Length: 306
Ligand code: MN
Ligand code: MN
Image (cartoon, rainbow, N blue to C red; front, side, top):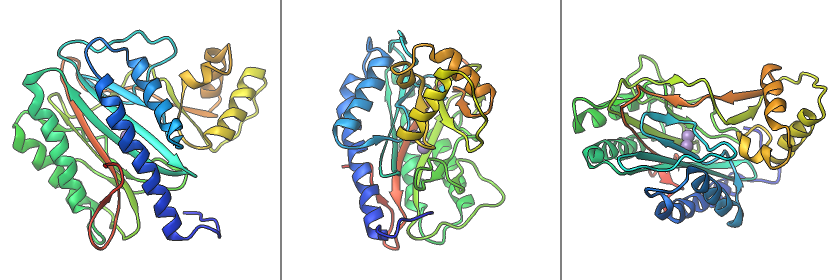
């Protein structure tokens, strides 16, 4: 991690805590809006505005993923999708202070048949957090997550492609991951590291695939020259406001009129990565739970709860 000379380790942890506190408050604020009849667009915008009002910056667009959609759905401009009876809704919110990130998600369920699926996500997340200690090998956490989820129902599975992840300065997904299924080799967790621990319980296959669309982007390290004025305007706005962190098509639409053409050009040229929406089998349900935590000798310090 690159550190400025002026920031001590403790200053950095304070920034992680501050970002965490903002996300914890944002989750409490947004929860009452997550109800049948609400537009996903309004949830995304309200949650993001709250983070900014509280003094945070957005670490990524607010995700609101429903039913078999596991992750990476954030409303595009003009999204009319509403929450319907029987939906299971994952809300994932991120904030950062000077690049030090908090990333946390919860699930609201409108189908009583799947209350246990939500419990599976929450309990497995907390079981994983308890195991994130200095010296733990990440492969052991995958076993804990899977067995906790399966203990709720033999039909439930963790989603194997999605994992917890280390957080670094302006980097949402660092080099270390925390698997949700048993894996043969892991890496050692060390004191002072910060992780987003996230688990996904599915009533479907436990595997996700890309849908052909997505509304979240990230700037890639490669710089290819682009000609169009719109595209150049987007790049400089992203460099200034989001750096290497993910951003939303909704945010760009507010700044550039012909944003669709420009974004397509930037993805084609390899300047931006487009995150596709991730889906399990249609008809199944997925629950998610996520908290950010600091690894300490005394045990996990969760930053994203009050
Ligand atoms: Mn998240
Ligand atoms: Mn995450």
